[in-house]
Picture 1 (cartoon, each protein chain N blue to C red):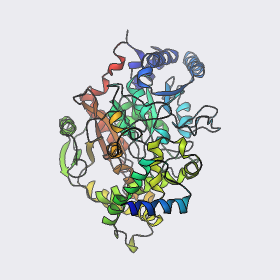
Picture 2 (picture 1 turned 90 degrees about the horizontal axis):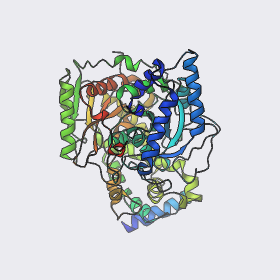
Picture 3 (picture 1 turned 180 degrees about the vertical axis):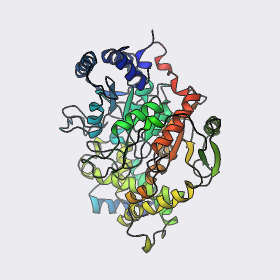
Length: 67
Length: 474
């Protein structure tokens, strides 16, 4: 986990010029490992056939019809 | 004598219209409650007493002169301090914007003013609308008027506490992960997050533009229907706002639930919930069933994806919008906010794109499966009995406090990614005397239906009429 956090901090510094502002920030950055795991668990749901997609169009397509 | 501030918003409008009260009297009643209870609750950031007094006198003159009166005529309102009003402060609950005075006015404020309302203050909120508890390191934590050491919910903390404390007849909040519904639940008031794109966001502080929503908190579903009817609809200043006609939300509040199918989710929305909270929600559905609704257990599809993708969208967009200040002045944020923003910079672009590109297809799949079986979903708004401010204080608490802090919004966040409308209303109290919230969600643009359910429930219950102890001395 320390290695993951070190690499994450280095990447944020390199790409954004931002350093960890405090210890809770480092804890939450370390917890990105769980974000990755959650994302990987649903990975590959996208299909080529789904694109192009539009959330706004989906809202209209699924909207409540006048009662 | 009845406290005029005890009137619901729609009752207050009628009182002004009928000559039973003046706008000046309504304002005075709100300010009297603020003077008495705000030192304990801390729901306001600024007040404009002189400006409000002048606006109230103008509103009273319009009544005397028999001018046309709008749907909110003569109603004093205060809002979450993130709605721009030209020439008035707008702190966004932050130190970074402590001295910010915008030169534009939010469309929703303009629409409420055109309907006859006037604004008298800015309400406390989470810094930049980014916490679910109501902590604020710069203006002081907002306290729950039902039991002061406990959280108000956030991020629209002052909106929830202010409406509950009879400081204002209604208040705008904003909802990116639950920030209208959470304080509505925690403070025992009613609040609606509309469908994504239903209400203009022009002139409103952004947080996560894919998930941000504007909506009201008030004491009743009817009040929310009134305000939503005023503010909803396409706005040329917000190109993301939907070009969908706005129905007459109040016209549908007839108490008739015959044929309505209510879904009680069997997954996610029961996970790790307190039994006391689940029992209150089950009892609430029994009340609705007595009006003709049927209740069905339903497993919700794609919840893992909704949660994973939704969290990524919010974190990345929030981080992006704060990047400059995070580089130049990270010390000006509260610890819990800079800590939360920081991780957002490490999430890859491919994750963000995948999360956004899946949003439409997931909504379509979710709606096809769920709303063919039921018309609305009923869940707790907050999964557990409310924690104290101390128990959820990341800035001062031990490691791990952040998990308790974020869990407050576990049951509200899914509807932001899905873009669905959801209303929270009070359905009981826990052993600490704190409100429990019932969340009703529906299809896109089903605000009329979920408000009808909420109104029907409030016809048979009185949770929404109860006054918090902080007002007991008055």
